[in-house]
Length: 195
Image (cartoon, rainbow, N blue to C red; front, side):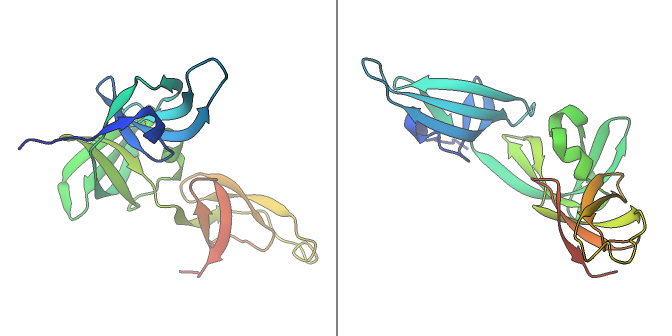
């Protein structure tokens, strides 16, 4: 099967675009177009290598063109972590397993808990990275007690979640509460119903 990839000019490297540079897929995180007097216009970008997870700053000019990255997405389930390897399986096919090292999935690793569904990015035949849901529910396993009057004044306290993550929450959150956390900011968003 022959794939014809479209080429992207340097001005099309907008935020969210995936393209191939030096044989590896990159995601554009930030894009700034600069036009200076007496000089050719340039584009400054902040890019994430979708295989290594590394973030780099790059500038491009009019002569630069890139192949659009053809990235497929497929749902996967997180199984467990063992010695810095994070194991996943294809949703509905537990035999098809893949692991990532903590460096590859970077900050996302701390949000994982068993049976979390994630989206896997596939580049060619290789699964290269994962994307977490924006919000994940966690059970609170440790929380300092709330005292009468604390909840009225607002404020926050640090709790420990079932996966070991520590975050700031409102005073009214207690042990065994299920809370929702935004995985892109790492912040508490709301209390979910108790299970």
